[in-house]
Length: 238
Length: 397
View: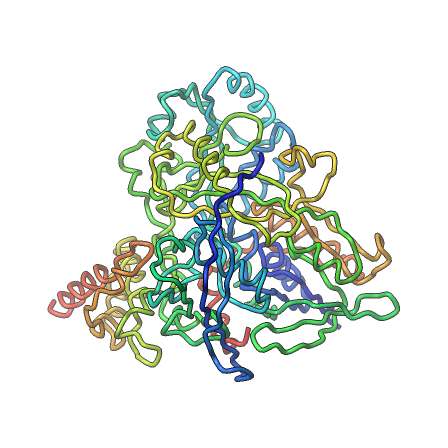
């Protein structure tokens, strides 16, 4: 199959460069690259690394909004570089900076270890597929399953006013995952609500709802937190 | 004495290889020039092959896929949507191919179940009404990031040292032997030398570049292909076209996405790859013939990934025919460069067995053939343990 040439545009990027050893001050560095009109910001970073700056480092893996690694600050908003197209961004320049709220390792790479601090590794990563009910899965499969929505990109934590790096709040992603575990495993209610209701739990949520607004995977952490708040409060009353 | 092995490449192969070697008792350092799983591994569409796709033209690959499918379902259930798959026939040509297909699957030991059009549509109402019949096979979908991440989590837990953003810039030599690598940490620019009893090049589509730094040529051919992710989960089962392997013959549901693909061309450089819009259109057109809703769905992402193909000049005009199998190259025997091995080719589904065979070769080269693989039996930790392990190590990786 032959490849058709696509129309190209020159795109001006400003990318945050950062060296942890302090050998150079953190600064926005300018790059100009030619990209197909359908390119994404991640395509742009790949092109910059290939043609301009082989030492530029950033996180990426799936390129289709499924792994959550490429979340960064693009023109001032937290989003996934792999599904943010250059065409949708306004202005002459595309500015790319590391995801706020996490320690920077170098350039656009942030350390995600703090994000996982309160995410229990055993909490469910699979759920029943919603479409299962409309179909008749074979007896031996019972119900079709699918991966949970959360891709663990860190955006909800980055935008949460209560979850800054030095704050105790366990954050929207952990609470949403906790509530999904509760929905999948109601028998664990007592222990899960104890975690949700602890001194780092739902009570620290400031109800900004930015987590739900910016989530690229429609997890709606704010809704999960509201549900947990109700459950925690009724379990405290009883 | 514990032998030290350096594995170059933190993709699916390197992850499984590091884990296999460390559980045999080796000391292992894993070096990855970028973020972990940022090459072809993570960009994979996520199909856990039942082997049926290869049964007719490559029965060995088919059997291997089926065996690995069963193992991965057991050792990493948390990363796999175990909903099986359908091969669907839409015309008389497909019907004829079905006879060979069913026979070949039976010979490979891959279970099949024939379903009438009505039965298949009851399972998956989104299928084309032109459907003649379908064959159910044990395909599945895995998370292309989390499944290999579980191997890495297990590797770290067993004591593998992982250095991300660390590029191998050259090799250490002594009397023609490879005795280690020179590496640069891209985060701080620091160069260092790391000695080893054996170096294994598992850099996927980038393995040719790595090998060239040791003055060795390997028959690696980057073979990029286009995949398209659509918003919405149109099916739960994997949908294949019941015809010989070709482009645009696969629909893989994943989370709330539907992924269609793939195309294939041959590229000079694994990174110099864009996503041609005509390929995107063609993937959508071809898969709409299987699930019409694909044509109406909104595109979430379109991307390319460079497969690491074993080059075969006979098929340069028809690269779909190139094998998806893998090979170990002992550069001591082949090129007079003892101490260096390359492990290349292969598919995501067979990452574990590829690592096992690579580790068998490594052990025999080190005179430790008594050390056997344990990866078939042990359940892997959930992917989040990777980050918990990094945290325990003080985030030093």
